[in-house]
Length: 230
Image (cartoon, rainbow, N blue to C red; front, top):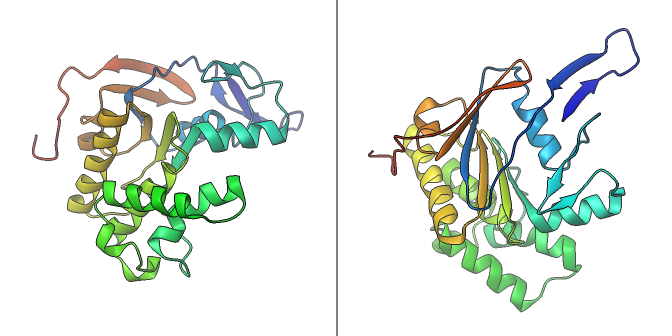
């Protein structure tokens, strides 16, 4: 895939120069590289938030280039979860209500099944005691765990995480990463995680390095740290 901005203008800039990447089901992959290397741009393309100028993108075997916006939105909602550096929770709503939001967007109105799904996900990330707390009443690490639960609400095949622990202290970051790893191992959910923290990258099974819009290294991690304690 190629991605350029300002196409046809004097300031045209090619950000991604022929990215060729395959993510297999159940992989836990770190995407690393210096600032400005194109990591977030690549995540936006894979997450169907933007489109490449050239090349093809397949999600769960479906070629996405010919899809209209409505089909793109439907595929993104069904198959891809997002965790960002900032949690983007709705402050007026409880943890449970925030986790329900993607399902609510898909189905239109809340019901008991939706609430049960959200409650199960909050339990999975260790937040059952805080399910009825508003986002402003819990810690930063807890807020990010709610965001992870929300990303899993539609049971996506792929979760894209852009610096998911970037705003957290070391202990909270380790806790968030523990949750991501546990979900990956128990559900076979595929993760692609952008991180600037080499210590966290070493907890991934595969490390892809992007420099100046090109993949310069794509290697299995032979010395995976299975937990924050090593």
